[in-house]
Length: 318
Image 1 (tube, rainbow, N blue to C red):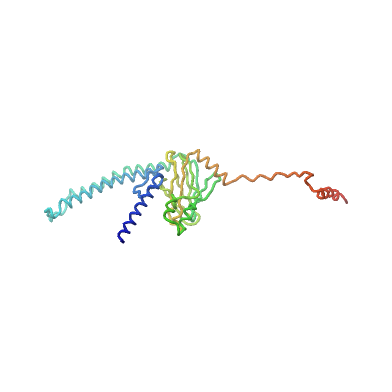
Image 2 (tube, rainbow, N blue to C red):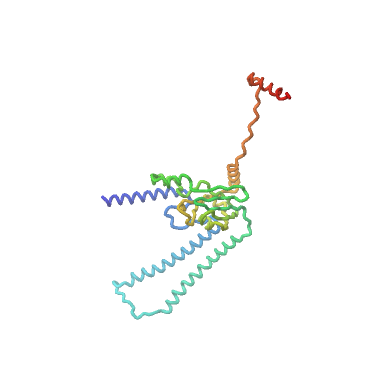
């Protein structure tokens, strides 16, 4: 009976995982459930990191096939049951020593050439003469982010969305309710909105403790330290418009795990529209002054009209 219950629980968990995978499958901007590899980069720096990773991955795959293939062949072909006799007189082989020393050196040199090219490309991007189109100041606080668009008179906070915050604190919340909230613990109330095809400068600091602003798709992570201004930049091409998510990557207190980051990349036209709407919402127009009220003589009671007529006369007496 116990064994049957265990198998049922395992099958339930498997089908639940498959259902979750299907739920995530329609969001290509997010890492997929059970994903083993990195996601493609959306900026030059993150794409360079991805390309370097894939190059070294396949180098390691070839090395693994050769090494473990040789081990398997040796264990299978030269086993005792096949009559293999160990060579007790073998001490060393100069040829083999040169071989197993020279091959790793060649591999390292061959790997260093494309890796160096990627690093140089990153350096050239960092020192590009292209001017920054805008500057965003990011301030980390326990446990939220403040974004200030320099020169635009716009500043707002971004924190964990209310539904995720409610679910995480509700001890009676079911797993179905949590799964139904698509971006549980990964969404915010106010995302950072930036335009595509724009070189954007970030200045990053903190108000209380050390935080770290990290969106993997952008290809970098930067510490937010009180009293220190760190800099970073990004430029997302128009072909990569979408929503990208990250987290605080520095332990910053009890709610460190509930400090997500959401960056929404939109077209330049959509960004201008959003900026105008956001500034209007943050700075509503002043209320109009109340209009003057005109009262007809017929609307005034007779005794009040007599009192008003007598008042000027009384004021003229010595």
